[in-house]
Length: 99
Image (cartoon, rainbow, N blue to C red):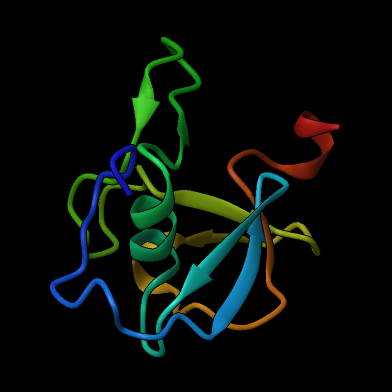
């Protein structure tokens, strides 16, 4: 967990949920947001489209759009407001840009 940004209070808590983010498998606890699970696994949730800098969320309440992600149907969502679910397939960029 040394390369992650967030560290859970109970590091041994079960992480039964699994989803994909930019091709990597991410595990999550029940009721984790997608952003919390991603940042517990890696140091960023995407890159800024203007300067290429790392994105890791900012406001954590759905206002700033720094945790914007896309699902496999092309829907845009905010990682800080989306509860993690088994089987999600998410990307840090729209699918048409990422392919």
